[in-house]
Image 1 (tube, helix red, strand yellow):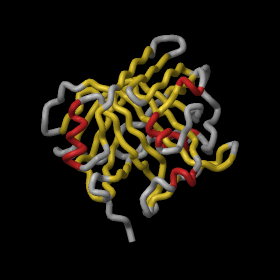
Image 2 (image 1 turned 90 degrees about the horizontal axis):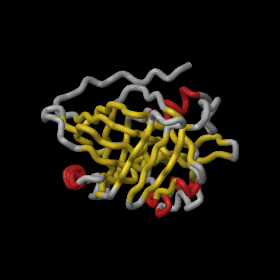
Image 3 (image 1 turned 180 degrees about the horizontal axis):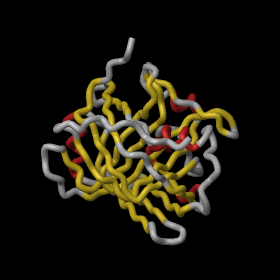
Length: 251
């Protein structure tokens, strides 16, 4: 059965909205026990049954922001690269993503850091794609990340670790709840919504074609780690349910 997305929460005047261009989710299989050591109490990695055994997943989600703005303000003239580093987790019976941090190629990276205590940092990021090429190509380069990939020939019949397309679409492309460690040590949370992705499958020429320093410093990947998958889309709309709030675990 095809994944049909989730209902769109009614947009509020204080929410934010943005268009994301040249969007890609670069995922890595990682040891669940190594990921668990990085999570706060009450959080646990989602484990997947891969061909080589059970493990967890993390993703670098890279894109170019376009026209980000709060709904009560006109669109801002922002067009810059962004990378979100996340892991797939559960908390209080709810599945979502844990954010290790965000890199933004814009001075406004300081705003969510100081306003909401979010782990955002400024970094040089360049993202380019040629969606009309055969095969389509996508490229990321920056201070702490790089990836060069091309569209894989044909749509894969399955994605390792998942029971079917609806499973990986919901897990990898459509998590709507996120958590992060605030600057004061507490846990914050926020939600998003976007229409269902219609991703194209990319592949790297070699493991050295993709490296993310954040994951390497966390001890989750090594320089020779090969991505589990790369899912990409030319553009997609996002609602961001600001402001983030303090996370209160369920009893």
